[in-house]
Image (cartoon, rainbow, N blue to C red; front, side, top):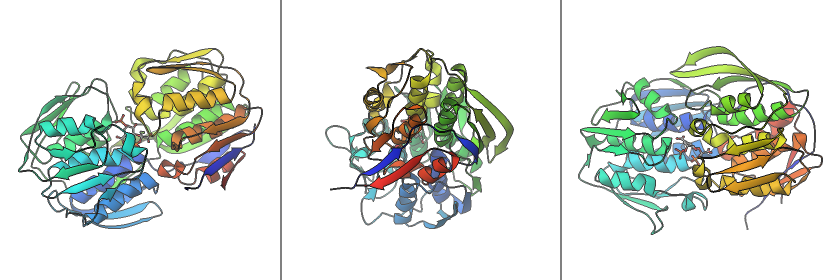
Length: 438
Ligand code: SPQ
């Protein structure tokens, strides 16, 4: 039986200090992928040494790419060009990482070798038809289980053709998957997004000298080009910063500075939503680092109020809802989220799992098919199950700042997928957190 890493968080406390959270997960994945496909040597700084990004790194090593590091966030990738990958000896195990599996499905669909992508139980339950169906329209041959889930068996084909695809869901993973497949396709590949999603793939492709076309909500590229190595400075992950933005907002007397946080406008929904709730967040030292906006954030505690979360903010804050639900539970009045059915197909069903956990802490939290309604008030102590979902575990850890008893959180090992060192960093700011293995 696998072990249960448990967080035990004593109630109360304040968050203070000046910290830098680890590197952005989305950008770290993409740095390995594009660095591997480029000509020349790519140096990455600030790489996230978490299990998800490491799964991507190992996958490219298994396909013959020489990669040095990571050491202190530094990675050196000796690119092999778009046609230089080799067939791996074994299936590529992508662990818990949806980004690795969906982006690799596109990137590998046009290679001349067979490859199988596998993942852990959670990843093996997540929907993959959203990428395999449009890839099939491009001429790819990918087998899934009858449910449309991993393992994905990708077979070599004669070539891919460009498509013009209207995405049914707002998903950066689908968009990125198709653009990466488009590198190998005849002609142009276009994707239309129903709403803007994170654009790290487009920005980084341009950084590697590859033209990405833009027409309103459409993004496109022409296949057959090449990428030129470049240096990448990965900003801190706003999705990891989000736990501290919420924690410092809800814990009276807190004041915390978060340095070098990625402020890409397709990712900043958490700041917009928290500010609407009354949060005191000051953005300073705004600058651009390697094509991505970065800033320092100072957050002080504030009286939050419940709001209707604007639908246009949902894709811009999609990974921050577990933390935002905790903010809502501590706010005055009702918070209503709609248009967020995607939360049900993340590492866990984040609507149901958060609702169950909040209810276990005495909060009225009513799930709906595409969102949740949360009545703010007081939180009791209690025991919650994160269902192996890193973001759920960290969100409930922050909830203890306002609970009137200890919160025990089960199944927290996957916090390492996105935020290695979370317990130590959170403790250094004042969260009274301990971890133990059962
Ligand atoms: O990689 P994975 O497991 O899908 O990770 C998550 C997360 O919470 O860390 C989602 F569960 O982030 C996704 C995000 O939700 C990372 C991502 C990306 O890097 O392109 C895009 C988003 O997913 P999607 O399905 O909305 O495109």
